[in-house]
Length: 342
Image 1 (cartoon, rainbow, N blue to C red):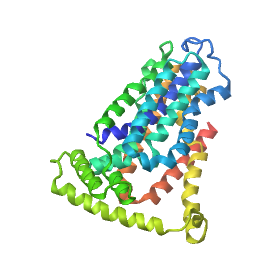
Image 2: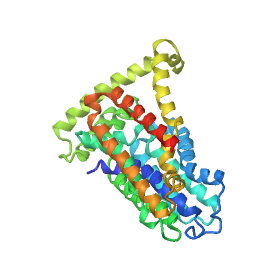
Image 3: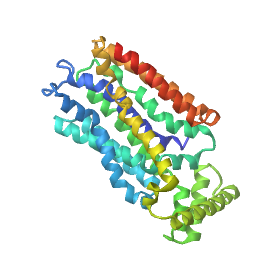
Image 4: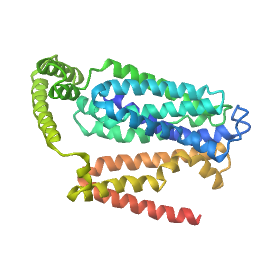
């Protein structure tokens, strides 16, 4: 079950999306907010909702230059610390400014927790089957559903919703502390000449044996590390022989860059992630005025997304990414049109 600890990083950010949906209702309620500053403007509410996203953006810029030198285990430990600090600070915020700082710290935690797919590498070292891949991609969506919606009618319920992320982050930190460094990272450092090749290779073998639950230095782990060393060496040499980043904007690479970058861009500018952040208020404005009713229905939205994610993970290898993408985009268009009419 070692793969669960890295996957908690995705769950925590997904949980934040789900919790924010209900917390925005509680935070703005004169009866339930438990504060004197509940009457937030649209800009202030937007900052509360997007505070973690700003933190994730800032953190991504900070972590990118140093990610490989730290290693995935250290990244996830830092992420867990930031998640705990952000969750606690948000839960006990005496005012809006402190609340925003807590949201920013929480977002920084997500940046460290997902830096260069850092969650994926420890998971791939610990498990053989598609369960690890499914856990990575669906843990965030599970988090969106697994929120403290039953606290929506409690005074200061938004504090409980945000604060409940702290114990999970603490569990993530303790779990990552108990795990060894990523074997692949150790091999990469050896290839880069940042230590003794033999010493780092031995550490990688022991780390992989521990992650797989085998006897220390077993033959299977030793063979896998030898194979990994060959593949990492080959990839590193190819990377060193390649030109600079400007070549991405030239020749055949430009077309691939436009297609790949365009897919990411248009997925975001459609605003589809914001639907989950504002699910509660949107449903309230649609006629479900009771806070509890709006929150329960937002859980249904999250459950449906979780179901679709599991289907996509299970079928992506059989169907391919293109049919799933076309089907997903078609579904968005077909559902947005009646939503606008409504």
